[in-house]
Image (cartoon, rainbow, N blue to C red):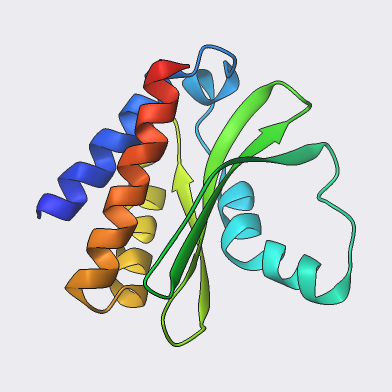
Length: 145
């Protein structure tokens, strides 16, 4: 339950702290944007496809420790509207998972999907602690912005 509360709080802070991103305050992350991050981005990379039209990904934070790695990126629409945060997590086994942190006031279904995907992919306490510590650093980035 602590994980769910922490992730929810993080999503709320992303929405309220990012002054450059107005659309996520009015329009939450869409299902299409969520699916692009968790499924489509991997397909795009594997097949050398172009970026989703009208969107860009901006690197915001990367961390590695003890064989694990996580990269956070912003999904930005039309160069100005922050739509979601992508987390690319690679575990000790080399398996890479793509997570979408949904933003906006009405993302309860997507937030539930995000939480389940984290619980399914990060199967031990050490991996979860590494991810949460990295997520806290991303949160700090937005607070200081």
